[in-house]
Every structure is written in C-alpha cells, then in structure tokens.
Length: 60
Image 1 (cartoon, helix red, strand yellow):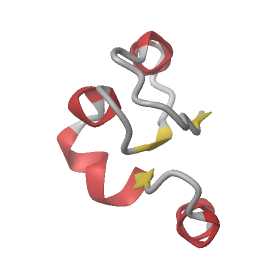
Image 2 (spheres, helix red, strand yellow; image 1 turned 45 degrees about the vertical axis):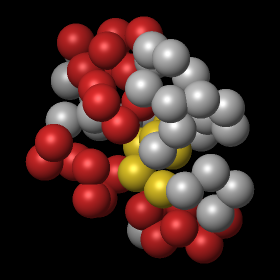
Image 3 (cartoon, rainbow, N blue to C red; image 1 turned 90 degrees about the horizontal axis):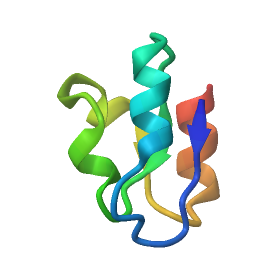
C-alpha cells in the first residue's frame, strides 16, 4: 500500500490496518508515520515528501 502523506500526520491508522492484513506499506517520513513503520522497513519503504525520484526508486 502507498501512503504518500504530505503533512505531518499524527498517527497513520491506515498503516496499522494494512499491517494487520500483512500488507507492506510505502510511505513518506512525515509526522508519526516513521514511528509506526516496522524498523526493518524504514530504509527500504520510506521516502521524502515530494521526492518523485525517491518514490520511483522504492517502487522499482
């Protein structure tokens, strides 16, 4: 699932719900999202907001 938040979302409930179904999540590193992303995924599935190249790299 892709959660491309552009603002400092305090808590990404949709990320928690995706994880409960075993769905991997790609997200920006905004707000509280980095705190709920699995530590093993932080380097591979997070990108800077508005970073089109970073997003494309993760998708590939």
